[in-house]
Length: 316
Image 1 (tube, rainbow, N blue to C red):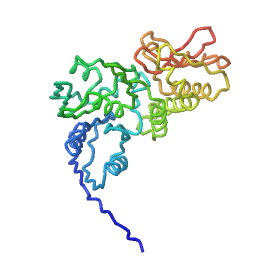
Image 2 (image 1 turned 180 degrees about the vertical axis):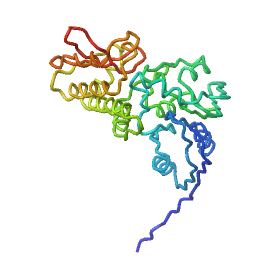
Image 3 (image 1 turned 90 degrees about the horizontal axis):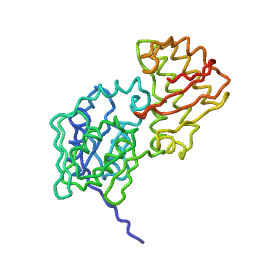
Image 4 (image 1 turned 180 degrees about the horizontal axis):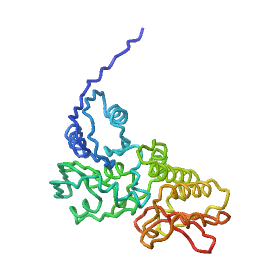
């Protein structure tokens, strides 16, 4: 007769009294004694109070995902919302995201003997602000992450550990080569968070804005669905990428539906708005028998290029 041993794991409790992303990062970092980064969602809502009882860190990750709605990294404590903030993709919404994230206040970034400590009282950091606080570290990133705002808490941690935590929070892939660190597109996370954004309900009291948002998301979701991982990486790699879709292709159809929605929403691109052009008239003169192109602006936001019947292009 064999004896069966029963191992009981001691339970631990993580208590969070509520607050913004920086409060969550600080509380969790103190509890687990590791760096924690949280991508700011762009909303002003305060995260709810939570008390999480868990047996090990794997269980804590699962429960944070369930209770806080966080997409927690597998190799670090970098957390982001399951869906990208909408401002990451369309220029007309970038400023909305940035303006909703409070500026980081009373932030201390200290690099001593290769160990990095970061303390924040509230708000969010950008990668540029983080890099400015550790000038001896060679850090570069894909422009898609320019407007990523994140909360960060760390105490005397290795730079590589902190940057891996940040990369998981903002949804990037960390590449370390010699003494340089690169935050690049991770196509798997990019696709997952993009599709999660497109699946979110569109709320609002102004029908025109709701229609425009739905058109943008439907187009974005279809675009990502039909791009391979390699195409996503290549598209964002050089900032000169252009992808063309022929008539009757699902992305072409989604682009035309988006244009129709933008007539109703009256949300033209900044370039068209400055020129004072008659946007509804231009959109109605789109040549639907010609391919539609998708490109990127210098700031990394998506630009859809529509062929017009007069031979010119309309960028929205």
